[in-house]
Length: 238
Length: 185
Figure: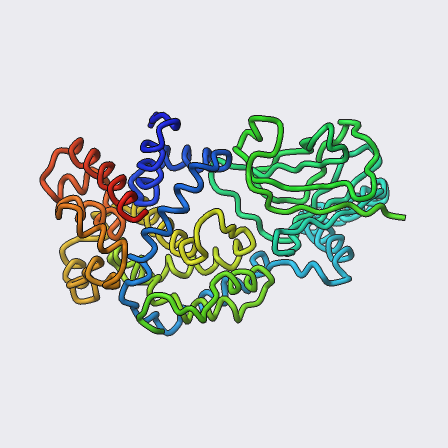
């Protein structure tokens, strides 16, 4: 697939074929990668989806089996599926609790693991600033703890689904003249210390942190190119 | 579950927002409203009721987990929902070989189920621009687009079904798409 994206007809036809489901898996991955950067392509795909939606929306409904809803409810009630309730004050202790629990899972050296887990926690420096990253609709998605050396620890609060061929990239912005600085790239949202040893400046109050969806190898431009999934301003911890 | 197209009173965007906030009743409202049509869409592609319901189950779980990622730049909220159903159905179709899905015995079951007599074009509203513009295409081209979208057929499968060379089908779908877009503009 190498139609010139400069030709509007090629772009429209490609977007249409994608929405019709006619592209092969490699082409689908390629177009989904491009859509994170190429707004014209993304708009063309969105327009085709809206044009063809009517075919789905006018299908004759088929009554679901009696248990279908229960199967869905059971699956979303499973612990890993439940979106984290970020507003709860007990969150921080829960983060620690879950870490402790995961250490305990290592059966053979459970005691040692818990002990060293506590030790690591005690030795870890305290964050100097904290930010809650939210989606556009204010849904909290992750917490950033920022440390004196500019590194951060990311704590996801919900499952963030990453389409194949893409990754999550974490950024911070403290100086508009310099622009956003990448802190790290993740294939999936997981608790992780990022930008360790990069010796970034000490985090300041209202410093912006954000997570964008980027190609798997990271933004090709060194600046955020994909949609911003979650963002938030840091508050300095006193 | 009503059979009509869009009920203006139902705000799919608000439902997605509520799902992102963890409000399960919003997911249930979406289910009550859309699940029947979602099964129908999956059934057109997969032709097996059990697989179609599996896909719709996965689709609701995905809607629940990803509702916060919905972004108007991706299309309308309902287009987003049906894209999820269609993509999951197409993945399932292409993972499990089609021949497994449509052996003769099942084809009989299928015609009993609901596909027989399904006429996606005829089900579009009378005043629909999509319908008017699809009807302007010559029949073979119209059928090619509908087979791809509703049944998930590949270029090669459409060529086989219509007895046309692959290259002809590819070129004609491309031209049909451009004509359709211009007509609907």
